[in-house]
Image 1 (cartoon, rainbow, N blue to C red):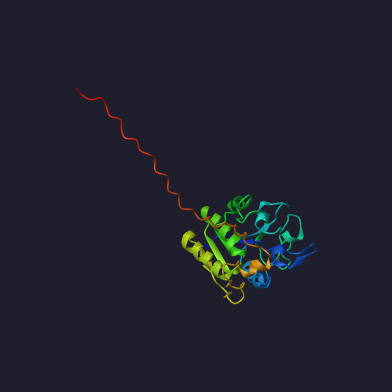
Image 2 (image 1 turned 120 degrees about the horizontal axis):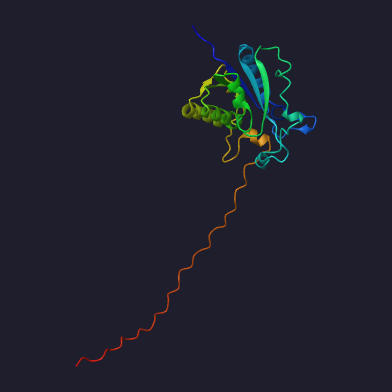
Length: 250
């Protein structure tokens, strides 16, 4: 007899700040074009497959103003703003007709959904035995959440057609490393290679999707060319004084 394990479907950063081009406050600086249309139907499919003992946890970027992360990325998903809300196309904790699984939301401020959140305690409380990973983005929040989960000994399955990379090639490298080094399962239901973000083919430039988000790589440091070293001038020869003669021995 096959006994079903209790699962938690983690839905990472499926919020308006990443998936909507703009909100009432204006354009979204971190908008990921095409991601919502590609992922939402597949994530809804996973909702429908859950049992009544399973849970759904939305892990949502919700930063304080002036968060340290904004030194690396443009300000985004400020707590309490529309950008930090789950997209309307996904069911909320209060309005969920797709599954009998309970839905929860946890705010996060770091890449890993386990850092400074109650996620570990929640999973322990519901005796979760397996994590199903969906959401954004493969190289950052998905990867770091998965690493944290494996450090806590949770079995992890990444559903590949439910995640989105910044760059397709780099995303696949990250998945391969998670499989090899962390023992993660990667489950493919739908081939997403034709709908993912473009592959960066520029020399030394950031992924194309990062360019669209206006996230610039760190400016290269200017290094001055070393000044030519002059050959040392020949030191003048010192005049040698003959040693003094000691007293004659008698």
